[in-house]
Image (spheres, rainbow, N blue to C red):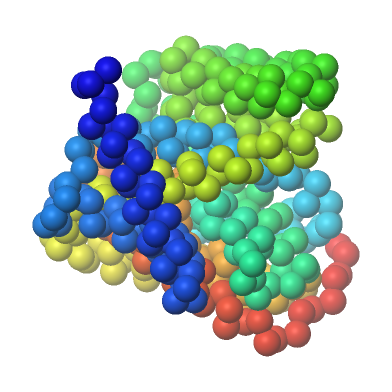
Length: 385
């Protein structure tokens, strides 16, 4: 028992420090996530002062991102898509593919192997669903209802397209240990399991609606079990499998109740994840990879923010195009997962990995602050395609 005391103390200390930093950030008119990232930087092995144990930080990142993406999968309500019929269904996937392809080509021309370039492209194509949800539900939000609908719907489509492409790409590029044919067969089997679970889990949860504690336990347990099955038996990255598992629950009538009961845990997952992100940035590798950071920020502006603005404006979607573009202009949890996969497979160098983590910090901070710029512009009328 005594041997676990330091780890328990460290978790409590970091969560308390993050809470204080988040409160200070909000008092200054900044998003709380900036405070969480700052705590990560302060306790990292690369800065003076108190140093959190590196393996503990890696565990924070792994557990935090798995639970976070599982909750994100539940949080993303497909019914939001029904509010923006027509154009959004092809504009969002088009932006995801366009950003991914252009960024991948740029990465390949910059010297990355094909697999690393594809992972870089996917990392930049996907926005942070956690940040998008926070933008639309913050007490200090400056977006209107129409803009919220576009942001959430766009984010859902991004995730669905991006995660599907990522799983296929990991198999096709040989980044999984199994052969391509076997990996594809296993992925299809896993898809069948998820579809079956989508029908069975809600029925089981329906029987537990009056048992609040069991409802929550079963919701989390079945989702994590599906994620574990996808990772251990079928070779799908754990975090991506956790997201798919969350989507399996969100399709049911019980999804709203599951979201409400899991919502209090989302902030804890987010704190663990963003503290770990801040702590894992290696300044030495970042200095060596400063050119990568400039390239990433430039690509995000040219291949993501600008096209998203143009698509939202000339696609005549509801909401404010500038806020939509800025609100989707960051990278986050999926970028961390894909970059970590690339680093572990030796297709992404440590300098690029550090640059991606730094870009996560910078773009989240910029997106949550600059999204307020477009609030004075009148929203377009809702045009149904």
